Length: 236
Length: 221
Image (cartoon, rainbow over all chains, first blue to last red; front, side):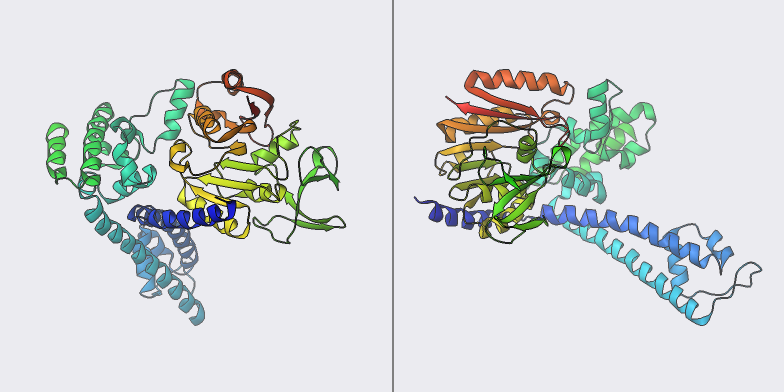
């Protein structure tokens, strides 16, 4: 076959293969990244809003420590408190600050929406993992592995350390202490355990994770609830 | 602007550390925002050796690559197609099979392949040559894949697709093979391993363009 016909055949085939490679895993990791990006930007913007409004309502700014709550409060209206320290905003200033707060508030609710989307998608796509690990950790491990398929092929020792690559390679290179957990550190069972038990729990959880990943990929039964209860009974 | 006669279509300008590398091109078209210089000899695209291990090896003075105007090349690990796009201008009468297995980068590669008539994309895993066995024998196999078993993959592909007397070019990333070993020791070990199957023509370390990378030029017996 001459090169040009082989080339056009390969072009068509590659396009088809790329078309087929777009699965729901892609959207899961993109949504998760969007969620993380938003978190960074929201902190940034909230800090700016705090700094700005602090000149007019210092007491309110000090009283409310949660960013989301503060933004919501301001978006309802920059109420001028009777304050010795706070300046009086001019009408346009007050308006623009309230608009600013509304925009940030909108982003906060969109972030919520992203999380709901992930939860719904995962309940369908990886029900066992979603129940065992919760939404964010499940999304994180799938995105770290690249796909649910690849995740289901990984040994549980790898699953235990997904997300702890830096510490793992430091351990391998220099002989420093080995990491005990990666993303699963955020799991309530692991994070609430005493430091002595953490490694053991992470190990046991990773085992169940491995089973659940396989169940989800091969569309098996729903057993995660039982596994979670077993773990809670053992370590809770 | 002077030609580097050892390689087809390649030119350089300047001296020492300030040397810039150019590839002669027919069209004023830039794929990666690279500079295009017009000169009385024609149009030239500037190559950044920091972005391409092949051109890093050239900048380090590799003696020969076995590349000719009409070479056919199997390129494993084509990625976004940076090096491939330049190779395509060098082997004007040749052909390139650009292989990668990551969908995200293959997407960019396809756009380039559509515009360059001597590039054909192959979406496959280099560890499984049997999945793209429809590719003909080639004059040059180039590989840059950063996998743990990259030497094994290289040998497999050279066995399957390289003509005898053809050249194999291997860009080796030590850090992908073994984090715990010293890169220099690994380079020596790989050289020995390659000598068992090939004639090792040249070897360069790619410092300072790429850290802990080496470049091997081998010839198939």
